[in-house]
Length: 177
Image (cartoon, rainbow, N blue to C red; front, side):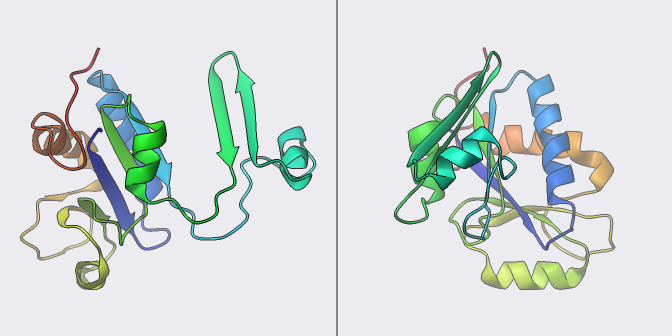
């Protein structure tokens, strides 16, 4: 199973921006990246109401897929929320690393996107797993390795060295193709 690293933080802290940049930096190094977005609300849709796949789900389908020449998206109904490890094991075993957005309480290593020192205090007290680094442009006093929003390529190097190259975190490393 590939290593899993979670990017956590408050709403609108910049988690998605950090993930976009991190994915690009890791892809440039030749790694296969999988992502999981933790959505805490019930009943989300990946497509717009009235579209075909939405209509299939609304009619009661337990699994809905949409396929194109370059993409496959599959949606399943589940009796309970799947844990990060279950999702990775079932669907993402071919990735070199899995990055999650959210899952603050999961037992995964965390990259905290912080807007203030209060974020560090809050997430240090409530997060499952270990905070291993902080991304912030604010003046935050911490012993964690800290990266500015413009230093995501350095964050990518940190993640490769700490989790991918040595097979730490969830699962083991597989070299890029």
